[in-house]
Length: 373
Image (cartoon, rainbow, N blue to C red; front, side):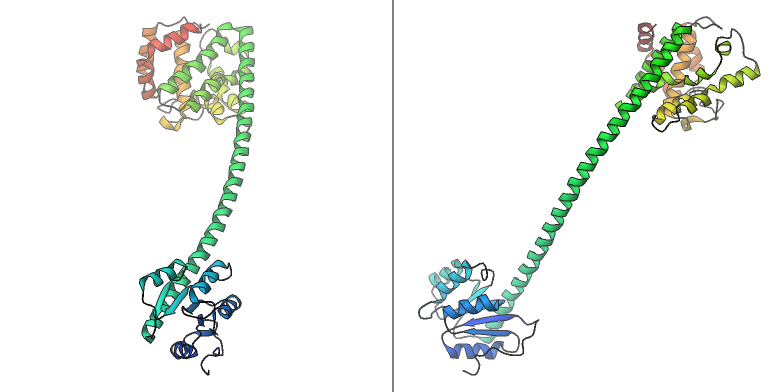
């Protein structure tokens, strides 16, 4: 059988096809059709076909149905039952045209039928179609494997990121807790120190914290901002610890030199709160709460929204509490007089939007003052 030998030389890019048929003439016919395009393997019965399939790993198998001993159906069943050959597409070759026979072949895992006598164009068309499908399936399998590996890698990275995020969150919470403790310690120390000299100053710094949080919430600030400003607003005058009592309690107007010294408390306050472990909001309040909306304030002459919001809030409530309270240098002003002064200074000293909100909620402000007086 001159045409039933495996063709040589073998080309790596040529698909490999196993032909299984007990009729040598059929193999010769198929060899004539396929020889120039494919690497061909041959088997004359089902048993040797199974052996050649497992050893040669063809890309496709053409399998005769009607063979003695082990017919094509049983051969196909065994091919599909083996992990080594299950993925190889099988095309049955048969003269049978009955539908039940074809259905049986498909149920066993065959992908197609070629009817004898062979038509060369049909044989080539069906083989090329199923080889193309096989290549696409293999490519898809490779891509799926790669995608699965990438997904597993991504999941591992996500787990690492989640662990790192949790760790960082714990660090932030720990640092925040430490900052809050430091701030509370400062506030308590200030209250105690002020209570020794002036009991109302201690109540003043408490009121500033509560006023500030209330106004911040009315202005639409988030809860984190509200919580922090309540904590840090009482530190607005922390720089005054560096000023002499004779200056702080002077009954009368300051001389130009004394006024410059008094203004310096914002610089001292900012310096005291400059440690990297302390929230920037605390420093902003101490440093900028004497800035004015029109730029005429101190110490940097900031204008409008260039002044941090927390400092604008504290500037307003601090001024209100100073006006409405008795001081060594003045009597307490009435609510009406205080409101007129604040309204006149909207857009000059104070943020006009904050003034509008503040005055619209005066009953609540008064209630806060009365509860902390």
